[in-house]
Length: 447
Image (cartoon, rainbow, N blue to C red; front, side):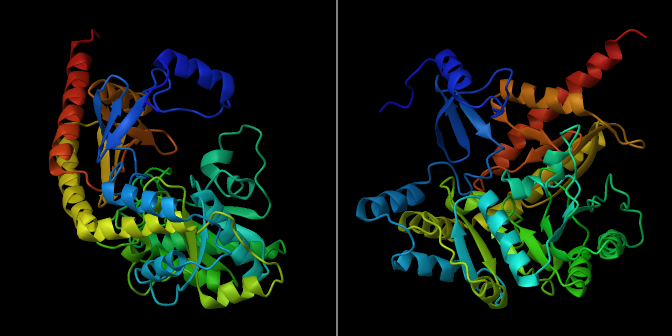
């Protein structure tokens, strides 16, 4: 089977005919047809190479030979559901647990980040007996019904959406644009107090909180880095209310933050979530995900009387691929690369901030970086159109980048972990060129 069966125009026509109209593509005005990829590069039907700054799914690099080989060899031998005994499942669970705090020892393997977060809610509800959930403003946790309810990033898009009475939206701990900023004496406590206020209001209405859920670093919310100590203080309030803390690592886990394997560990060794969910990078593009929790939570779920199984979750092929991904991260020191290259990228972007007033804030950890664009650094007026213009002009330069956040004005860097300093040089040089042209054009415009 060839990599390309149809001309691009026919592919677009067939997609319009047979694929749901709400299923959007990148660069919808002029979508790219990708037919192969390697490392941090993707290639279109004409062989044009694009630098991929978007794909946190291809975590260790597109089409990594070790990952491809592991999946193909296991697929040739056996693939079946996890209700049969197989060593790949327990070996992978053991390897995964070794990266986590000791008390997070029980795994449930599923197939997507959405499925993982949905199961995490079920675990919390069963353990606590409480149904209310606290989520963060601008959060996104998945596309199934239970998660749309706790994803303001999604339900705020609906003009007539009614927020579930069992869902409470806390302030995003955004130190740049949020209620409590860098100049606040204790933003961690201030944002945690907002969560506690939601808990008290819920109690006044006869509700009880079963879970607080947050991405360890908010991605769709605009690459938000919570202040140190925030999670500890939130966990204290949530635990006192009888709830559990769910850390969503679907976007940011597996060494992406550089200094740690898991982003929640940025908060310090004294913080351990009750449940951790993971997906996207876990299988380097293979549909695989996992929920890890404590023995106590797992036993409560078992004692509900309802058997749990997942036909495809934890199958031998998925686990073989997962093991290969862990091997590559270790052998190629990709966590170290994220730290080195991410730091280099941040320094380059900080130089752009000094040079171009449109660049309002640079933030990130490792290869999870955001550049927020604003028209006014005092009023923080979002430069939404400018951000969209930059990503389309970068596409013309064969660089793929996205913009997100509540105002779609944050340039998001979350490339494959093999991203290099040379790649960082190239993308920032092109951004500099685009911003420089923008300034020159503004100067030449008549008053």
